[in-house]
Length: 547
Image 1 (tube, rainbow, N blue to C red):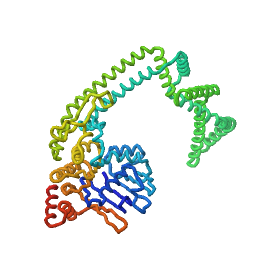
Image 2 (image 1 turned 180 degrees about the vertical axis):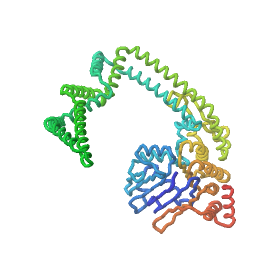
Image 3 (image 1 turned 45 degrees about the vertical axis):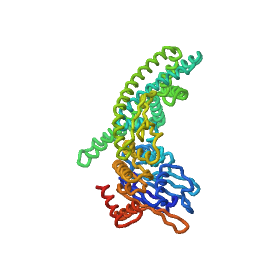
Image 4 (image 1 turned 90 degrees about the horizontal axis):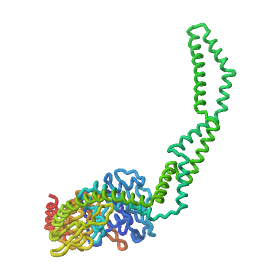
């Protein structure tokens, strides 16, 4: 959800700071006051196209900055984490637009692409207008919406996995049919396999050889010093240290000499132990020149094969497997294709079985969705509307064997038509509102914005729209630009948009109304004037919608 919005030098706005809460917020004001400017600003954060005309006259740049709180595990959080962001409780999105028309996007003050901005907030914010072409009007999303409503994620994943297996086998067969090899190709492939096999490569072999080579070089570098140590000890120190230790041990044993004699004795044996350990290290790490030559020759062979067949020994061995597969395809083409056909048939049967089960669940559950939408539309005074989830068999795909399309009839006697090709104006807006009350939470959308979708309606219909928005706001933040008192009275928060002029420039401002100001604004919207009677009616309207 949006927690804070900062706007500067944008169209008619000088500077604006707005804090938002969860729930349902409305924006009212006179026609032309600039209510839709807020929506335009939020659209900029969603990576809509910017132009110099959006910068307030006489200013160098416009700034729109939104602070958001995302639900754990949401699309926005996953996208930001993949992009290397550390997600805290709040994330700030910024869009700057210069007077030359250039724009810069930032997330938490780090410059990012517009594509990243759009990927994050395009799934978080749903801006709805009378002519929008949102996800609900996109037939391709209907199967996803149905499955989300019916909680068929596990079944969908299984079908998608089985389809990928099937499609992969089909692709392998198609590649085999498309490939044409002659006798020289066959001999060349055999030569390559033989070259790899003759090397007798083993996974992890190169690392062990490198370690041995390094060990030999270290020993060779220190060999001279080791020889000097042993020579010094053997030719002079050994006898002298032995004699020194013997002489100390022969001293009269007194409180003063005993510790000294013991210290010399310990030192004598410590030196002998150290030399013995050095002998062991040298003996264990000793590698002959012949052995090091063999190691280097082996490493040369490995490097040669890696240059030809892959970056690692594992890659080289995998190449050999692929080459044997090609050889098998050439020498046993017909049997290979027959075997591949059997694998394809088996994979398709497994996929089809799972897809049929998925279809059965869709067909059985779609009537529940249809009934829920019917009830929602009734609440929006669309009693004559009929909604049906149309499920037809389709070509195999990752989503199964179904084409799913939402069908609607708005008036008695009218046939059902695709949702994307029916209804207009206020009817379409109410229809979309009814659908979004069901699907918004499933989509994980944090904020839904309605721009005067109540145009052309009044009375009970307006009240129904307001109540439905309030119902929707239980699961997601809802903003609505409205000119109807009935809608405004249903909201939990009321913002007033106004404009002023100094004779040369016009400025738009927005502020949140307190309870008394709100009563006056609703009274003015409903009756055109603020009187004792209109204020009393406004209080009653608010009370009815919040009891």
